[in-house]
Amino acid sequence: MNPAELDPTLNAQGEISQPLETHAAHSAHSAHSAHTHDDAGNRMFGFIVFLLSESVIFLSFFVGYVVYKTSALEWLPPGVTGLEIREPAINTVVLVSSSFVIYIAERFLHNKNLWGFRAFWLLTAIMGSYFLYGQAVEWSGLPFGFTDGVFGGSFYLLTGFHGLHVLTGVLLQLIMLGRSFIPGNYDKGEFGVAATSLFWHFVDVIWILLFVLIYVWK
Image (cartoon, rainbow, N blue to C red):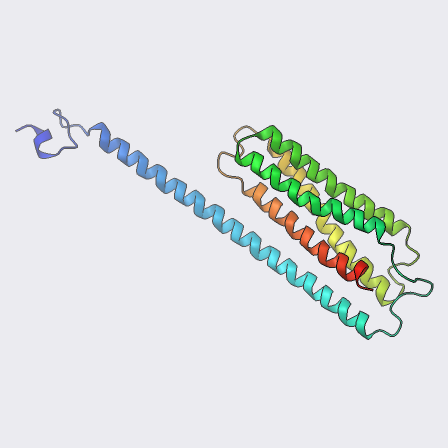
């Protein structure tokens, strides 16, 4: 009797036919893809947990600022009547706008347009750098220092801690920009870009809250 009649996966010589080999290869590829997807999902979940922990730190600073401001008899340092809002407002517009720019960069990468991604990604880093420059200029012109009362300490602590996060975001963006020139870098996913973008949105939201607390709330 012909072996193929006993097992449809065997040919007339008793060898495994190609469809079974193809099915096995497809199953192995599917398993690898599922493992890669799960690994990326776990990394993103871990990164979100990290951002939540950072949120708790900022929240504690916010609460402390509100408590001190509402309970202090003399909130502003002697000779200081308030903060200039014009330049910080410009910096705020630049930083918040960069969230839209980095989103456009992500869409270019999703559509496999690397040069479009690089252009808008670099523009985001430039906007973040401009924000840091504007903050440095503001600091240099302030009539009070870190040790000038609770307000002085709170102001430099909050804006400085946030500025450190902005600097971190810019450095991450430059690293991702450099990695975009590695051939096949995004064949296994775009976790680095997605995580950096999420971190940048987080930084922007935190600054909006800080701007309202420090500059808008009189």
